[in-house]
Image 1 (cartoon, helix red, strand yellow):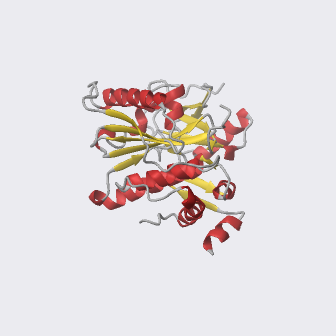
Image 2 (cartoon, rainbow over the protein chains, first blue to last red; image 1 turned 60 degrees about the horizontal axis):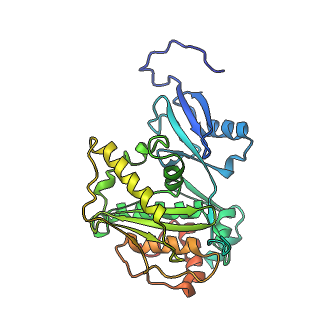
Image 3 (cartoon, each protein chain N blue to C red; image 1 turned 45 degrees about the vertical axis):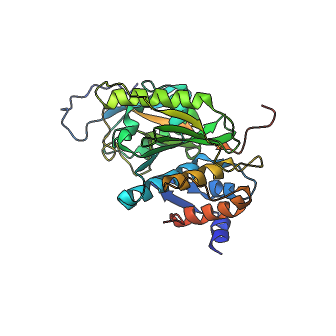
Length: 98
Length: 220
């Protein structure tokens, strides 16, 4: 889909990188984004694609939450890195019946 | 009082280490409500920050977010890409590693890896034994050790798996997450006495509202 081959020197600080977004059920969505692009864009695009409210899902990189102002550069992300998507967890007790 | 103000503010939002607690999540601290990952993980980040601030006067602690366990359980170390979760610090140099665990979206427990005492202790306010937790945590330590220590095997000599009977017992069907937060708060200060009981939970729920609203732990 977004496979335009661009001749960008690897040292270019703003060369786009490939990012894989993986859901809790293992579904993968691939994005190509610039290192300076806010990840909130990717988060919004992902939520749209899977039909979820962006506020109902949590995005993590290396086990830490991603904030709206983070960019691949600010998180030191590398090409082909993975972002995990997790959904809300709740708990109160184990139901007596189970 | 400030607690009521926070609870009544429908634009409430508090952010700590990028974990966001909004008004909807905060309402879950009201009596009788189940709590969610945002409240737990916000609390874990406050414990991490306190441990860093205090240097050697408190145990060197790392609290993982509650998403570590489902990644370990459902995907495993490699496929779950968990190498990066401990790349910015040496997991094996910590005194204590604390991990909140959600079970089937119905129950919160926790596990503590104590590298000084060589114990893996499961803390469940229902005092249920959790053999699978030990299995998954041991596998995690094996794999992370190999990844971080040049393929070296983790040495399990002298290590014990323990199901805590010290954690105060939950007497209802909704407070487990508060037991987890307050037990881990206590452990992260090196205090194993768990100075609370079920009767204190209504107060501790309010205390958590205050702590999250002010981004400050009561026991600084």
